[in-house]
Image (cartoon, rainbow, N blue to C red; front, top):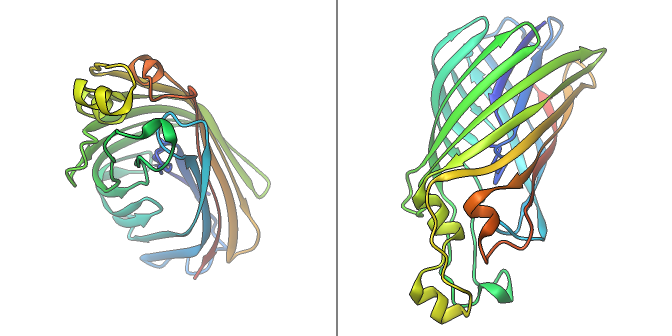
Length: 263
């Protein structure tokens, strides 16, 4: 059995969660076309994430999920629309991808946001690396806004311990997210002009720890063709994200559930 681990975005998650959160894939010798250069799995999925960063409300978004790779080199997995493992070995990966999440904010999301500018979602450049020793995997990733949405730069570091149990693969572990000043000001800061328009107090931010989180992933092999998984990153907002007048709740949840069919 071979274990492959990729970052779940943990900003799913917002895709937040996200960021992170992680996606764990598992390959079995009896799977369809196990020796093929192509591995293709698709199916329905459901994402859960805050209505906006710091919101006390969650929203659910049905969305198709894909896990496609060619020679384990080029891939498209969940929020990673297109990526490449630049360097890889039996127990490590270094690469990049164009990643997409739904982290955004609209003044119509909540009456408290009236007078604040909208923040749009968009693609991000993701640089990542992971290394596995026995059942332990360390993973790091950096996400840079490339769409001009003002979401700046974030970075995640996660540690996972994984164990196959029958047809289950369970992976859990802690992690943290760092954000630069551009990100925190866009999503949690309030300028003097925005304060006057919204009635919220001015709030200046800088770079620092965005959240501390815990990742949980469970995958189940239903049959040689079908599998199901549930992934979640449960976190607590810190520093500028926690103290912002925009933040209603420090609890931060990003998750995804999916059922995949492997061709």
